Amino acid sequence: MTERVYVPSDSGARSLGADEVAKAIFAEAPKRQRSLTVVRTGSRGLYWLEPMIEVENSGQRLAYGPITAREVPSLFDADFLDGGHHRLALGAPDQIPYLKRQERLTFARLGIVDPASLGDYVEQAGYRGLRRALGLSPEQIVEEVMISGLRGRGGAGFPAGIKWRTTLQTEAPQKYVVANADEGDSGTFADRMIMEGDPFMLIEGMTIAAVAAGATQGYIYLRSEYPDASRTLEAAIAAATSAGYLGENILGSGKRFSIEVRVGAGAYICGEETAMLESLEGKRGMVRFKPPVPAISGLFGRPSVINNVVTLAAVPLILERGGGFYKDYGMGRSRGTMPIQLAGNVKRPGLIEKAFGISLREIIYEYGGGTASGRPLRAVQVGGPLGAYFPESLLDLAFDYEALAAQGGLLGHGGIVVFDDTVDLARQARYAMEFCALESCGKCTPCRIGSTRGMEVIDQMLAARDAEKAGQLGLLRDLCDTMSAGSLCALGGLTPLPVVSALKHFPQDFGLQPDRS
Image (cartoon, rainbow, N blue to C red):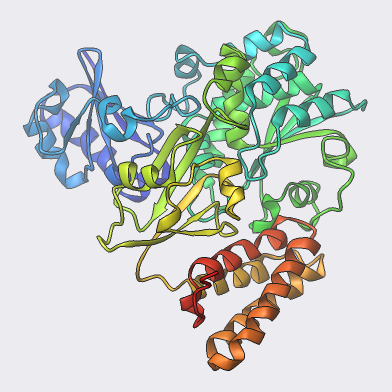
């Protein structure tokens, strides 16, 4: 009997040596008179254990990790193919505490299926959502998404169902579905994991959106730094088209929908939906004025459903099990689950899918294990490079849209970056302004000029005598207010968040006295 060994092909795992491990296993097996197949999967997201390999034993998978190519002979010595004990044995993957305590809905197949195998996807409940959607009217599909409470997982948190309903109700000879896969925020990797590890889920979600909105053409706008995702998506689209899940007659329904992958131009601003549309149309990526919103006048001036990858990937399960099932997870206006990407100075970085409501403290300590350096935690940044910095005293905040917004932050794409007590928050605040200056499309003055002036003011504040700091502080606050209120898009509008939060919680880093009021 040919045995199966699962080795991740996720680019994060590959960067840690997964390809070398796969080759070593394949080369070692004949020497041991063992017949096996090496199956490349996505990653389960336990990056401190990558490369983490798995073997099937008596119908159950057993995991070992982190494995290096040098460790492979010792695995065979321990008879790992038959469940033998090895010092890097982890037991059943779903019993590892990091995974066991999660609510994996969207990421349930990650690390289990071969991303290139449509058969694997269908066997693991894939395309059930689309089949159900094809039996519903467009209005009924939109209603399921509305009931679910699904909000955009790309940062803005706008209800997905409202976007879909607007596009559905707008008459036009051509409509589009666009997946925003320009994942550019620091500390985020959930979109990449889906595209590399479970691409059919994104394709199915886009197809359901197309059926709901009346669209016939879809595009995946992919950041140029994701070549592995590009290859995986292209192969998956070809397989889905060949099997009738895409094309002129989807599953015999008479509905048509096709998807193309378009690689982005390498600009952070193209993660903003209207700049992305400009880039898709072959123009320079610059922000558009709104209104009109893209749901009414989007790609090529036509009504367009635009959602990010994680949002669209949540849709198949919602249609399969119903909006009420998904809504049962979460709290308040934050429903369902969120992929939390934990990075920075943390012992156990990785992906955690949890229902909204978990605290930052639980994420960082119970999942992340605290700082990798062992030093005290000083700050966490939530929501990417435009997210606020929170001190240790605010770690009991709930991880949901409203709780973070109430403290001057944002949930964003779900990234959390951890810093220990060696961080200089004044320098981090300056970096926010520098990042904005480098990435601004230049269309509006508050963003283009404000960010450059912001760097200068922070430099002057750090160099100023104590008596001069108050004037510089007032100027910096005024500048932040202007950027927040006057910028055309979130890049300039949100850049003040990390600056203002650093001033509020860490004034001593700027040479200021704490506000005791």
